[in-house]
Image 1 (cartoon, helix red, strand yellow):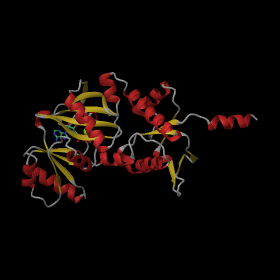
Image 2: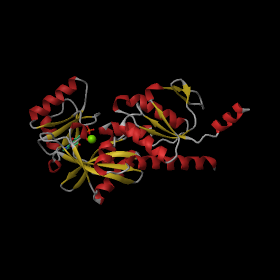
Image 3: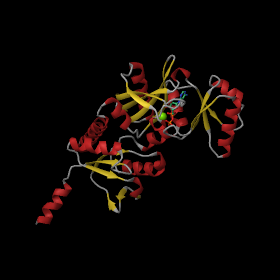
Image 4: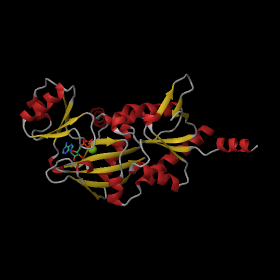
Length: 313
Ligand code: ADP
Ligand code: MG
């Protein structure tokens, strides 16, 4: 009898919020768990490297540490750059299972490819810095002229935390960087150096259709990259409307409902650099004192509830 009651109880358990993350102890994961618990939500943390996927017609299933995963009401992917492919396969599986996901696999994949993301943004009239793909064999002088001259920024298509972003002060430098990377089988973006923004940028955190927090990041002395991982420093910022609109539009165009959008302050307004689909928010919460985790979890809960209602109809 006792067993039966337990079984029924389990079957009726409220759907859980699943956070896809390598570790519970990572700052952003820990804060999301705290925020979910504060709202009385059930939570689970799924390590994508411990997930197995079962593909079967009309019956996709997910296993975590050998046990089938059921009862997920919504999933929140926090996919690090080093596990992008594995992470995407798990997100796709959840989508196939009908689980609502904050940031779908297609949007995450697009945001991880700086070229693909910029192509989409430009096509949708979102302001971006002038950018060309520096394929091998191109005339360097011409490419540099196209982005407004020197110095110019060079970037790997995939990269994060400032790794893979370089500045070149001469054509010879551009040529040698492009050549070296070509030999390593890598393509590069050559980009206008937005000099007005030298050493600083804006990080805006978009959740749904609004910016829930923003900061200005300033690079440490002698560094042009303002990433906090490169020693940059964040201060809270009341975001001008033009900037908030550009950030929200950028996230919508790429299809992300949660995004850390990096913007430069150009002479004639914002220029969107890139979108981060699993933005860390330790620096932003510390700089602003805002409850970013609460905003993200609140959004996930609304998404779960909306999907549950729609299914019941
Ligand atoms: P990552 O994914 O590594 O963060 P970003 O494109 O965001 O790559 O660039 C990292 C940092 O380098 C930015 O935050 C900014 O400070 C600086 N930066 C990047 N592109 C430009 C540019 N076109 N002009 C001026 N500074 C730039
Ligand atoms: Mg960035």
